[in-house]
Image 1 (cartoon, rainbow, N blue to C red):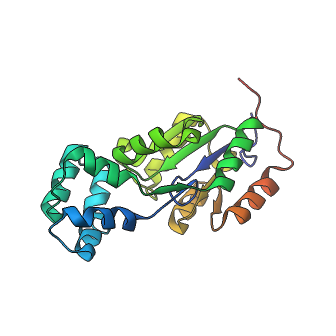
Image 2 (cartoon, helix red, strand yellow):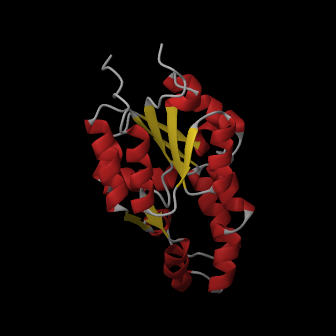
Length: 212
């Protein structure tokens, strides 16, 4: 059995790590189709409990859409809403290259994200790199959000890895702290260059896990 201090797999947060995003893009595109001003759209949709409820699986896609309509007066159809809501992402090439290199070296890689169904649908359709992970852990499917320790436990149980066997990258300090509290090798993502250097330093002397 491998020592729990040796990384055997790498866990990636999604937003602001592999993909940059800006909710303001969606809010501005919604504006011509809404009765509410821009500030209200931003506050009622992207900075309120509505998004958190959606991302913990408490609302279906249709329910979320109806609540956004009620809050903002959005007059478009669901198909239009879906496209605008999803089209807020741009790739972070250095981090995508890092994940590709890790898989090439034989390290399993996982997505571990507070997110929602519409976002994941959009990303699957538009970013081919997203298909190349060994597993995916989404808050909306588990009914749990980082930094809730139970969400981290789900990943441990399904991957069979725990403690220092997991190298974890996230841009949110509270999420990194929650991973560290479970013994994960946790790195706060600040810039792609710093994260790549830290990951390579951590794994330089580590042999990739054997292929099972």
